[in-house]
Amino acid sequence: MKNYFIEGAVSPQKIADSIAKHQSKHAIGAHAIFLGQVRADTIDGNTVEAIEYSAYEEMANKAIDDIKEAAFKKFNLTCAHIYHSLGKVSVGEICLFVFVSSAHRKESFKASEFIVEEIKKLAPIFGKEIFENQNHQWKVNKFD
Amino acid sequence: MFEEKTGVASETWQVNRNEISVAGFEKLLSEKYPFFEQFSYQIAVNQQINTDKTQLLSENDEIAILPPFAGG
Image (cartoon, rainbow over all chains, first blue to last red; front, side):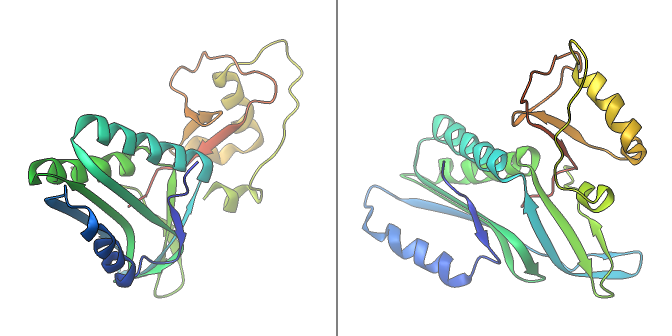
């Protein structure tokens, strides 16, 4: 089973390296890249300074794998790569990296949105929002 | 999140009944840990989200109590 999790934030270098790796794939005409970044939400006067991610890992990897398979079936993709952080990710750092490629742009646009929405809905990943005063609360994904 | 409140990441339960459904399990869960009644959670049985509370559990089933998701 593929492991979609990495320890800590996704670095900009990793994203650049991924782009570089695809330069040899000449059937690709479009990439769509989604990056989830930790945002400094303010809740009741407290500001988030980091999110600590954990997951029910075996099930989460299977869920992400199923989502990737579904994306390949629904959209004519050449490639899809997904990485999610575990552990502490500070405000401004990247916690989710979704990178899809296709011959033409339409599939990439749609597939990236599909994958991100499905992950937020179906992957058992949990986020502890750590505030500047070191209190914490648990994040809940919103869909609207 | 629930690990913080119960103090454990996992437990093994021995249930002395001929059969128990997910609903039955939830009742035992809130008897042992009453706070669960105030929280939103989903149940996964062997890593599949459970929607039918009448589903019967089998020996060695892995039951996960999952807080709301926050991935991405």
